[in-house]
Length: 414
Image (cartoon, rainbow, N blue to C red; front, top):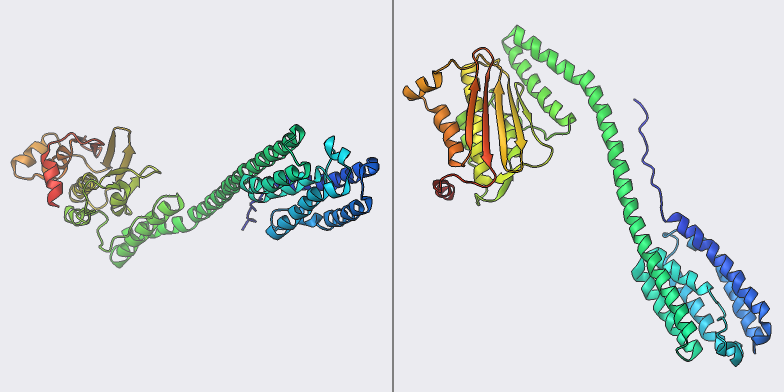
C-alpha cells in the first residue's frame, strides 16, 4: 500500500511572532541608547538604570514567550504590559522638567508598542484595543496634559495594534480554510486510490458471482442477486454518492404497492421541503442505476412523494413487461424552474397503439399512476418507446405548482 500523503499545516502568523521577537530586542537597545545619549536629562539616573536592568533581564528572559501564540499566555501578557506601564509612569520621577516639556521619550520608549502588539497577535484586534487603552492613559498621566505629539504617538500605537490584530484574525481564518482544503484534497486522493483498489478486486468478484449465479440457477441465482445488490451499493459508496437502502425482499425493483407505502411516510406538513434523492434511493438495485445531482433536490414533501410514486410505477411496469433481466436507469435533473426525472429501460419497448388499447381494457397504470400524478402536480409525463429499443418515461414537475387546486386538498387529507 503506498504511503499516505501528509497534510502540512502552514502557520501564516509565525513570521509575525518572529518579527515581534526581533522588535522587542531592537527596541530595548534603542531605549538604552536614548538613556545613554540623554543621560544629562535624568535627575535620578540610578533609578533609571535599575529600571533598564529589569527591562533588559525581562526582555531577554521572555523571548521564548513570544515565539508563538501557545507560549504567549495571558499571565505573561499582563505582566509584560505592567512592566511597560511602570516605566511610563516612572518617567516623571527620574527625568528633568525640560525633558518632559520638549516631549522627550519615556523610559521604555517604543518598547511599549511591542507589549501591545503581543496582545494583538495573541487575541486579535479586541485584545489590542484592551492593551492600548491603559498605555494611552499612562502617557497622558506622564505628560500631564494633552500634547499634540502625545496624542500622535498614542493614536499611532492604537491604530497599528488594531490593524495588526485584524490582520492576524484574517490570517488565522485563511489558515483554517487552507488546512481544511488540504485535508479534503488528501482525503479525496485517498478515496480515489481506495476506489481503484476496490474496482480492481471486490467489484469484479461481485460482478463475477452475479453472472455465474444467474447461469447456474437455483440457490446460486439468489446468491448472485445478492452479490449484484452489494455491487451496486458499493459502487455508489466509492463514487461519493449516498448509499442505497438494501431491500429486504427479493425484488430488484419496487412494486407500485411498496412505493405507495414508502411515500406515504411524509412529513406532517406537505409543503415542507424534502430531498427527492432520499425518496428515490430505495429504487436503486442491481439492475436499476440511479444518477443524481451532488446537491439536494428539494421539493415540497407532497410533490416529492407523488413524483417518487410515479417513478415507482414506471419501474413496476419495467419489472412486469420488460422481464426480470431488463435493466433500468433513473436520471434526476435539477433545473432552475423544474425537476426532471427520466426512467429508461432496455426492454423490448411498447408496440404502437398498445397504451390506448390498455386504457380501453381498463388497465390504467400509465394513465393514472404516472400521468395522473404528474397532472395533479401541474407537471407532465411523456412516454417514448420504440419496439426493440426500450422505453423512456420523462417526468417533469415545476417548482412552482401550477396544477389544479384539487391537489392542495389532496395534500391536506394526507
